[in-house]
Amino acid sequence: MKGALLVAGTTSDAGKSVVVAGLCRMLARRGIKVAPFKAQNMSNNSVVTLDGGEIGRAQALQARACGLEPSVRFNPILLKPGSDRRSQLVVRGRAVDTVGAKDYFRHRQQLRQVVADELAALRAEFDVVICEGAGSPAEINLRATDLANMGLARAADLPVLLVGDIDRGGVLAHLFGTVAILEPEDQQLISGFIINKFCGDVDLLRPGIDQLAELTGRPTLGVIPFAEELWLDAEDSLGTVADAPVGRSRPPRGKEWLTVAAIRLPRISNSTDVEALACEPGVSVRWASDPARLAGADLVVLPGSKSTVSDLEWLRRSGIADALTARAQAGGPILGICGGYQMLARTITDRVESEAGTVDGLGLLDLEIEFADPKVLRRSDGPLRGYEIHHGRVRHSGDAPWLRLHGVPEGSVRGSIWGTHLHGVLENDDFRRDWLRMVAIRAGRTDFVVAEDISVAAVRDEQLDLLADLMEKHLDLETLERLVDTGAPTDLPVLRTTR
Image (cartoon, rainbow, N blue to C red):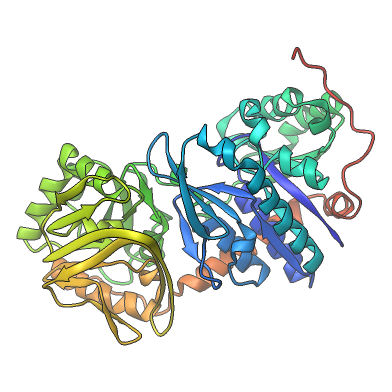
């Protein structure tokens, strides 16, 4: 195989990221040199790469599926929303501006060249490049500035597979309508469909698939069944629904459960930090958006935020700030990560993100935070692995440090309150086990037993292999390989529209 294709979706969260990860893993297992590519992502879930930049977490997972280290090459443009109207623009791993929708127009020519250059370099180096679209190509109001969907496909002459989520309902209409609304030149690159998250008897769906082929002239390459085991590394905030569980809880090894309430901040970032806890047998993790959910929890996690001061104000308006203060006074365990760590401080001085100046934090740690440029992008590759992405600097800490990274103190601990800027710290298996034992003691769960055989990395690889198995079993691989090798068929019909 030699070539590239684009996986687009009828909606956000249709399954583009997992299909790309599954295809990458499947090809890598066959000895094919494959790489992922997402020209432009919008997500606050990001990681720091070996080359010192920042990319979407989904592309880091896809790189792992290929057997590669994450690189800014795989996601050259990242938009990180800080409000409903403004996003931080990250190009080749570095923040270059804060933009609104109209501001983005002045960057488009430069960004178009960045995308073209990176994709061309990847295609020269790898046998196959599996590209992922962004949102939906049916957003025709954004077509003029599109860099990740049909704009990319047209520029690079990529065949496009369109993924639809049947769990949402109306998937056949979504697939048909997405094709029909596109310009004729765009339509001619849509080469087939994939239906995702199917439950039930596929024979009942078959007549609809056949009619869809008659109406569009395009085949459905496969129907991917719903797999409840797949939950790690959620792409964006759609995976963090308030009051919903994280992962699938497994029975405890001891007599007691450990319950975790993870606060679902409005501008939550790196929400995947809590997923390592959900991998543990006997640990039940749920997202919480009101103070009542905190009352019975053994541990409360305050995760990262793309808008620390704004989300701190939300904590106060929602009553969660008061619940956290009462919890701290009672000795209840609390963990703050990155932005959540900053919120636990006495003061936060921010003239960079919110431009709010100095504001009071929750005051649960003897800590003073000041935001400054440039953004800290740092990896820790051992013995404690993780990464940092933040503008906030610790200007004063009167509490004991929680961690040591290469001999340098990091984070804070005061009684049953812990905080750190290090994302991914809970994925360190031995560290997580030791810390959970301490949390259980502080929470009075003396019959909670920490499992000794859980590896978060192994769980992640198991899920990638499951994805690859699903692709191999349920996709028309012969047609897929032909599309990669020869591109979109030249005889695809154009659907008539009223435009």
